Image (cartoon, rainbow, N blue to C red; front, top):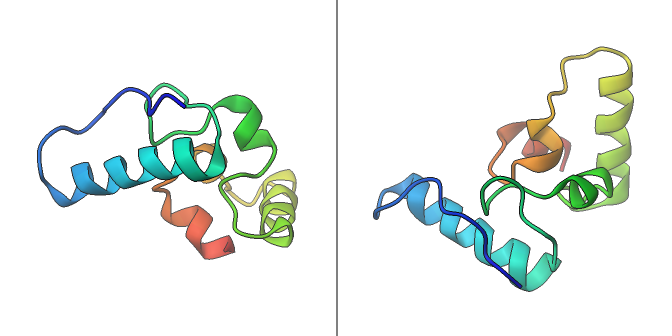
Length: 87
């Protein structure tokens, strides 16, 4: 599977974290990339692939529906700290 486009280049912590998430998304999740490789495509984000367990995904959906400030990055950005709070 295609690792996707690189956003941060170099050897910084951020660049290494993105590279790890690109590899994980492509090799383990077998999910498509969004605009950049560390972002999930729309279908993977909708399926809750950014969450470890389904109950975490459901909780995030419920909070978003209640207007609790759950942003799109929670579902698509594999480096989002918001997703970690639900997981």
